[in-house]
Length: 141
Image (cartoon, rainbow, N blue to C red):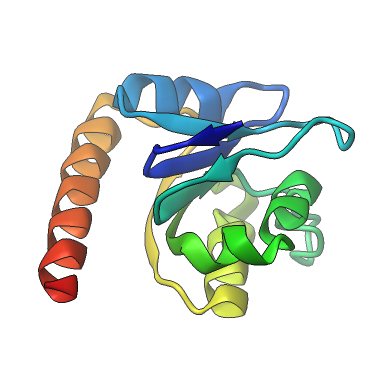
């Protein structure tokens, strides 16, 4: 599936990230959970939104489907930033996937949110994405 969305996301079975992205009400492509499912093919630079899966030591923070998606060179080349979710109950590993992806792909962590986010998170991140893309377009001009 090829698309002109500026958001690519992965959501686990809990559906928290999907609910969050749905509430953003912005075009988005979803990374499938099943390894045999076709990956989205973004047509534009995008921001990745992902939950964090990690054990107590932080291992396994980036979900395997996200790794599979980012292992495609063309996808990784279009990645401009990451937004990570997590559960604050996990302390130091809260939203750790964002830091791991940012470090490995050389992009910024734009922000973090907990579980399915709050209405404040939705408004803050929607505005932040607007500002992020406006600044990116200004830098490109």
